[in-house]
Image (tube, rainbow, N blue to C red; front, top):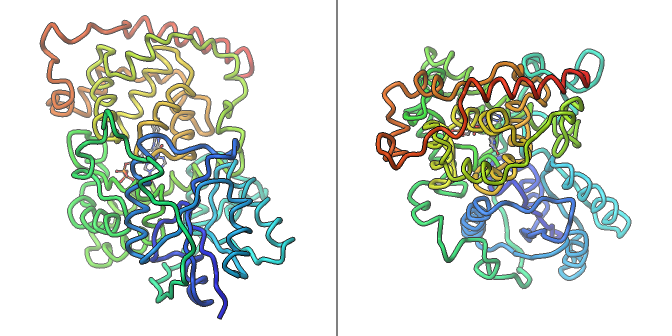
Length: 448
Ligand code: FAD
């Protein structure tokens, strides 16, 4: 029986965790999480995400009966830890952000050179990004054929939670010393009533969604006033639940009630968008920072800090945009329909670079996820793979009438709506649209 290090990263669960199951099978386990703030290639989680991480680590540690917390460069800390405790192997589940891919490959090579076995597993996706290929053998750039190809492959059943033995654990940081949660001001006050980070909270969320939310999901998911989506996104980002578990549980729900098949198909197709976003980021890593379509480098973005601030604070004078930005600040979450409208407003009405919006979302979203966030922003901005056609510019007032017809969502977040305290629209829609299209002419001239 040899001791194995289980390196937890974005897979903060025990069930359906391939790396953890293998570590437990081998013998005593030393579970470790490393806060990697030294590596310039690896993006540090934003403020909201750090709040989640704090609670997720606390939940994981409780479930395991102990978790070693270290802060620093994993490339140095992992071999040192292995030497200290005499571990022969280090196991982990793969991440797909470009910086993590690069870092992990270097760590693997370094460990092998030092005689320590290093093995990685799939813990975050239905299929690895390299398992899905076009007829020509390359990556997909369009969602519909991607998802068709993904659906045609068998999906492995989740790995059951395993019995494990915890080894004697070496010294660990105290979680509180990491300062992941805000103090003064505590902008996350009350969030513990809205969210339950951790594996048990994720399982409860899925169960509740499948029993109360799946029926009617295709229609309800577009109505921000309705609690019509799963809100599993932060749990998925930190791997407190896996897409395979979601897949299996959704299939079981349909077996019990076959009339839910259409609703389930739509829900799983959203999990498919997550898969597609990870597929894109893995195959086109430069798109994390650069326009996926290079012609968008010619777009004349405005440098307008005051306008950016008005958008961030929900003071644009467009109620649906403002409601979304305030929901985001107050709860760490924004409804998907409203994300699209708010992102469109920033990039098209204000002509501010999508990267500025992406950075704000990164800092304020509890579900901030590089693959999904970049894909979402580039899709809305028009610069992405399989993006919305540029000329289809959302009219925020029309979107509000269509998706929040009785203004329940808008009134909840913008209570001063009908009073003189509410600002006038900062730009006029038709004028903004004309200016956005004029800017797009430069993109067209650069190749479209
Ligand atoms: P549900 O409708 O219940 O969907 C189930 C799951 O499918 C989600 O939890 C999510 O993992 C996945 N999913 C759903 N829609 C999408 C989508 N469009 N793209 C990729 N995956 C999707 N999602 C994030 O997880 N992190 C982000 O940082 C993020 N940034 C976004 C930025 C913009 C500009 C836009 C337009 C969308 C962004 N999304 C992001 C996608 C989407 O808005 C959220 O995943 C969704 O709102 C989460 O709520 P839910 O879990 O209730 O979704």
